[in-house]
Length: 214
Figure 1 (cartoon, rainbow, N blue to C red):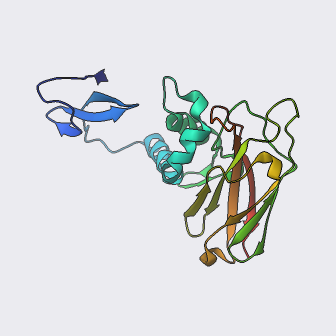
Figure 2 (figure 1 turned 90 degrees about the vertical axis):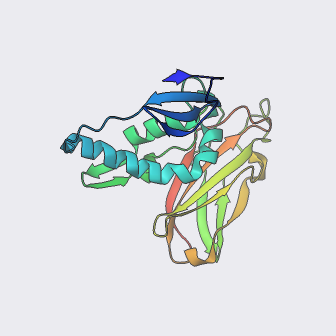
């Protein structure tokens, strides 16, 4: 992969001759055009492609949240690529071709900020709403509960998401998350994590579910 800033063509995207132009972390880059061998893929290749497709289908719609949740890893690779690799290694289960995502093992945030675990509850008690409660476990000599909670709800039956950024302070200890009314009767998965007010520190995400929606 080569980086370029100026040239007779200027920045470009897509296939030109034998190279492909694209952007990577704000830089224009060129890659060699993929070469087709004409050979049928092996079973190992089919498995890997299936795993990639499965994880990409889930993570791509929540890229914005992944960039926040994995911001601490924005070095040689993008936050999305780090999250993708971790989850494809840890959160896919089953035997090909019946591969599925193990939502309990899936992570959307990873960092050093204090997380919450056993003291989180998610319940659907009202139509179009998930009641989320937790304990303000921030030590008084740290952030004093000012961290903001970020939420992701996923409905696998409908393959739809609801994301809420900076929903409430850790000290609030509760948040009523609105979800579509057509989710009624469905089971959903919820992930939550905390971010400091200045946006620089993130906690590990916590998974809750499956949770029935009223």
